[in-house]
Image (tube, rainbow, N blue to C red):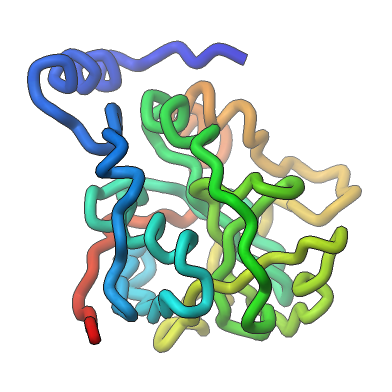
Length: 219
C-alpha cells in the first residue's frame, strides 16, 4: 500500500536531501544506537504527563530503539489509536506518513521475555516473529498471557512510573476490541494518511504532544 506524502512530508523529505535527518534517512550508525542502561521518558499528552522508566537489560534492542526514536521526536503528535479499557492502550504509528514509510518495516530481531506484561508495563506491538518496530502499548490490566502468546510473546521494555490513571482515562469510544463491529481506526489508513485521516475521522483520540528523555543513568 503506497503512502502519498502531505506537503509537510514533501518539505521534510526535501530538507533530508540537503541535511542528514536521522528519522527520514537513518544511517547504519543511527540504527546501531545504544541507549543508557536506564532512562525516564516524559510523554506529554493532551491530558497530562505520563512518565515511563525504560530498562535496557529487559530488552536491549527494543530499549535502544525507544531511546533513539524519543530522542529524535518520532512520537511527537502520535495518536493513541487503540484503547481497550482494562487491557491495553496502543500508539506509535507516526502522524507523518513519510516517517511511517521509513520505520514501519525497520523491524527488530526477537528477544526473550524477561519481564511479565503486568499493569503499567510497556511493550512493542507485533504481528509475528521479528516484527517489532515502532508501535508500543501500555498494559492497563494484568496480561501475563501476552508473555507467551503464539510462542514468541511480547517482551516488556519499560514501565509507567506515574500517570497510569491518566492512561486509564484515555478516550475509548472508538471500539477496538478483537472481533468488535465498532469503528476502530485502520492501521493501514494511519500509515498512508497519518494524522490527516485521524483528525478527520477520529477527532476525539488522545495524543502525544511531545516525548522526551528527562533523566538517564549509565554504569
